[in-house]
Figure 1: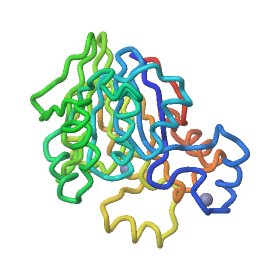
Figure 2: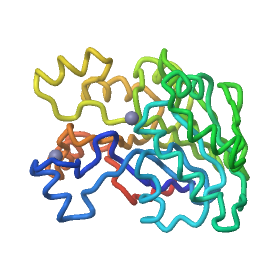
Figure 3: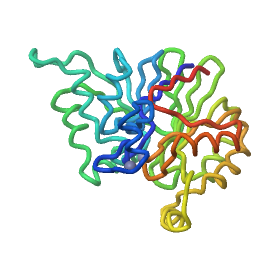
Length: 274
Ligand SMILES: [Zn+2]
Ligand SMILES: [Zn+2]
């Protein structure tokens, strides 16, 4: 199995617009420190997970040749607002016709949530006007087979937030980049032997004030979350969705990795072979 990290930031990318903090200044100088919006890609089957606002830049930066299917984790804008990328990939100008159609998978409730907040316009336009995407609705019973990969949606929150269990040739990876309920994740995955869990970072660097604010919306303290995650039969944990506000500088990442040898932090352009 091969996983390419297209983007490892979130709503707040690194560098963040109009920010002159040290981390953003460093990232302006050093492309290796930049984090685009959150997305991964399976290069062996051309499968994309989520379309953040800068997905077209991430796809071109990594020289991705084509995308044949896309899966959505949830409706939040940092994961969906770049859906106009379907037109760039599937529509031919100036011929004014479809080059191809792409299957786009929405786990239960995700398309409805997009509609509720009037964020489904580009999706509807791609499906019904351009006719370049096929909307596929899936639930927990629907493992999607794409060549020798199996991609199974797992609901990991009381809200319509989903992760995906990706299986290929006896190897398993779990991807859930945002808004996870860590108790639901550990309960649902307790019987799975997983090679790598790729999860949101949570709060890796906090002040008491940020913890107070973030815990209101169910975010978890990194060390507490890690303790719960380590009850799983999982060999490695890779953290992503690293927002600018977490201020995870290279030194802080190094420190966390020294304290926990079985964890890693993803970066844009990272390729994992499992
Ligand atoms: Zn900044
Ligand atoms: Zn997010």
